[in-house]
Image (cartoon, rainbow, N blue to C red; front, top):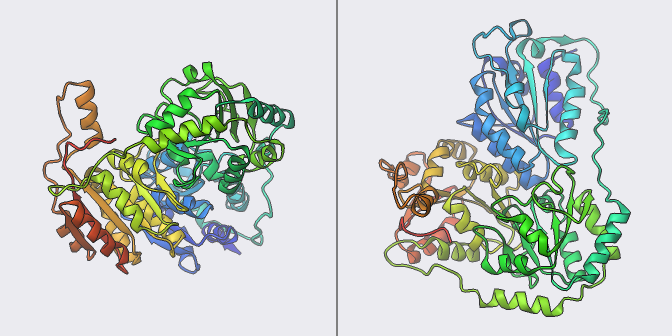
Length: 540
């Protein structure tokens, strides 16, 4: 016989879960008591939101759903931003929350919140479990839903008395999930694939645009093989960074408002665009239908709701990117586009990177280029939204590593916990978080978690005493009328990190920053490098 909490832990063990990120409270205490006797590692966060971000980083690095846990009421609601962040970036996640007793539901008792209702618009599915006997089925379905089709977060809300209920039948975890009406389509339609292959053969100026779906599908090898066979140049959205190494001769870099000018130019001049797992948000292509008027568009996506949502599509293909690219590669012939490739590569070769080393401050763009040269080829770089995100996305030279950021929701404070989760998933790989001083202060409490877990995470703080991206927007749209963007009262970050028992150093120019970056990467423990940045430095 097992009680509901023991069944919950048994379900996680059956799914091969090794780490959960969480913060306890009374309504989830039965689960924590059962976890005491498990081999599953628990990482105690300092804020529940960061538990979700750590689970996100873990999932994106490992390819398996990350698991976060919180209690009822404020514990559960603190998860909301992290759950929404995962939903926007299609990250597989299981969020387990405690809830007040069944008979107390709807009575506004202490620490009650309707978390399933609150998260309805940004979870892939949610459960309020009312019978302990249902827990094995619910957990099996949740993991299946989170990791199949278009991945995303699933919420499981379990009242305290359900966790405490003893189930007399033996524990049995279902071998597979049987969910009526849920059958994600993975194989592309053969007629549509033939049409796509024909369009590629006829194109004179084709471009492949990789989005985050290529990464989520683990289709990097298939994408590289297809690109080389077809001879088509490649661009990526921010979420597609890392699909192709930056030095690949066919790769042009990131497109969009903050992307490479020559990558945007190639998209603007193309007569065919092959969209792979990209939703074409406003930061990627400002006026998508203007592009679609001059180019034929092929759109491949696992989620049919994304196809044609933001850009008119000529050839829609619903299916898993990995599967569709393999089938397309079998039919595709090299495109007749040698002159076109030579042209766009000339654009790329003529590009002069912006930002030169300085002696009076750290120039962040040139420093990121130096940092990428120092880092291992398979390193993981996480960047916080804002100027740091753009500096990193544009200037970090991806090889075989991963780039993690909050691309859809743009959640500040994401990088530090996500990088920690990724490092726990891949302990042998370097993991570096790049944060602005504003974003860093949203998650710096997790320095205690870094210290407690003894994870050798490396953190770079770009300290310009400004909310830089908003300040840039105020310059452009509001005639430089700066309000609420000067970060008065910032602490001495080096002293603060040392108070946590973490090694830290300050760099005041690029020569110091590069020297200290080498020291940081060689350090056996966690390390924070604070870079003093000129507040006038632009994003691009």
